[in-house]
Amino acid sequence: MIEIKDNQAGNMVNYQERMERKHHKNNLQTQFGVVHTPKDNQMRKIIGSIPSAQFAPIFDDYLARLGVCGTNAKSA
Image 1: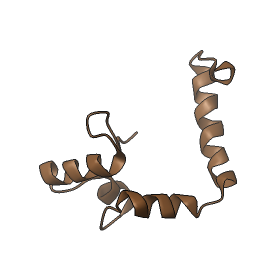
Image 2: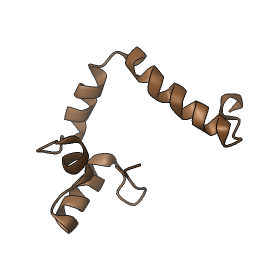
Image 3: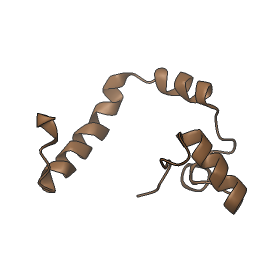
């Protein structure tokens, strides 16, 4: 599991930029081959262009993993 964001950074883009300043690379570069970290509005445009149904398997898997851990995520 890679970390793409932390609470101190505020958002994913700020976190990736902070990682790049500190380590001269970030997770988007090393894990996904992203050359330039997109800005917030670019990320919204990219994510907004993806049909929401394509995200369903990610959330299904996540919820299944929570269930294995004994967390009742569906009741929330």
